[in-house]
View (tube, rainbow, N blue to C red):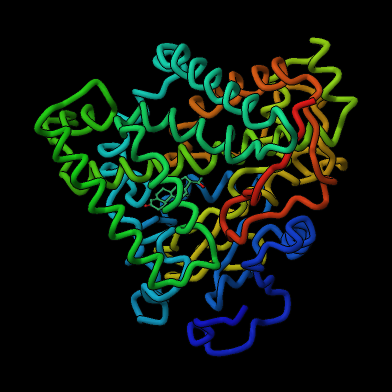
Length: 416
Ligand code: STR
């Protein structure tokens, strides 16, 4: 893969810089190289240099540091024009005004309604629907896998989170295939950038129409609640509602696919541990938390920018520089998780103090929802198909060419 933005730094990557592979050919090797490069490491993302945080302790500090902001205008390479909308990862940062892109008091204003709607208590009300979706999708899995191999991703792990977040946000089911197709193309590094920008525009058209429709006829979904919300007497603008809506759909959909599939994969690769779970010796919660730590759905979170020089150990993040959080590396931090951090082990002493949902003001507002989804989906899947197994050797599973998310091309199984 070439580096269309080599001009952003004008030179070859310096020694010690980890060049992130857009084709994701050796994720574990790359994670180890990142960790070896230090708590704060220099990386290059398609020709664009940035810092990344690879350790738990430093991430915990930096994620509450007000000198790091999400506002893209604080990025030197953006201000200078070295990075433009032609850079394939720009959609991960320049995603419209929302709780994902704003800090401080404005961020609280944008986020409060959403986080209130997603507390564990409020989520109890969604449980029956999530169970129903799970049952229906398991029926189609049984149907399509009756005579042999079936793709657990396409038939189960992908549609389930889409239905859940679709129901929450008030997106009709007929639109789900369109959304899943567009997000797949959005995240894939094989999609030409002009196509990615065009599909983002198409998504905006769709989301604006949805928000106008709900403004005219509010429902009992979170989109309607965001339209009607007032924080300190100040309603969200249409742009802000759209921004939050698309952040919720993109995040709720993409990340939970990874959580469910990675948990199934880890259990099938560790049959002794699967046995402990199926025998009831250890709970699903341990499976979910250990999967979140060991095989994080989000590999790298883009991006924050330094509004002034920030010293970290022997390094200094200079004003205007970009900072990525490498959650996969953080989950494998031996200082936090012990010398065996690279091992999947659901018998680790609870609680497993991972940081996969982030930390600080931007901590994932959907964390509880994804845990509920996984806690329903996984036992239902293994309860119905206790003989579930991979139809190909584990090392033949292919990662999608996605730089920020940890997602598989497909997951062929035999239901047993
Ligand atoms: C995708 C494109 C878009 O339209 C809006 C957003 C904002 C939220 C982002 C999302 C993005 C990409 C995936 C993210 C999500 C928030 C959480 C999720 C980064 C940029 C994670 O992977 C943690």
